[in-house]
Image 1 (cartoon, helix red, strand yellow):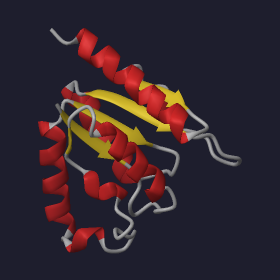
Image 2 (cartoon, helix red, strand yellow; image 1 turned 135 degrees about the vertical axis):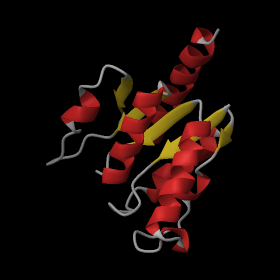
Image 3 (tube, one colour; image 1 turned 90 degrees about the vertical axis):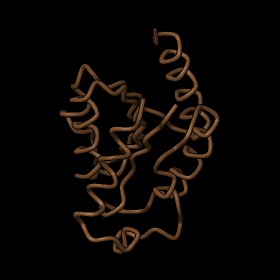
Image 4 (cartoon, helix red, strand yellow; image 1 turned 45 degrees about the vertical axis):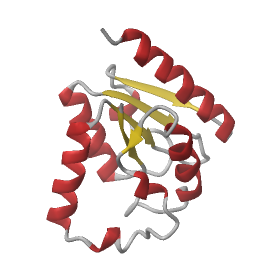
Length: 143
């Protein structure tokens, strides 16, 4: 199974360590095509050093190869929202993990989308349990 992990890059890298832990957990379910999102070396400014058009083409190609998209959406990101929208449009199953924070709310466009599984969590262990349940459901529902 191909997994597309989405997390904020240019919107802020404050959750990179969380992304790395989630990506590590996701590897039990398949190939994570976007492992670099969890890398501490990736900053909001360098984006792997590729020009924007090359990044877009690369990421969309990975997205279209994916069976599921798992997004950590606690840090708002235009790019992650775009990826979620493209995934929904293609019928790719989407899990969004959101950690509530003072002064922030999940976008209504994500939270209100019936084609997205939205789950709030407090701890990394809770997020991992949510991932496990999501993949049980995905694997059970596949023909």
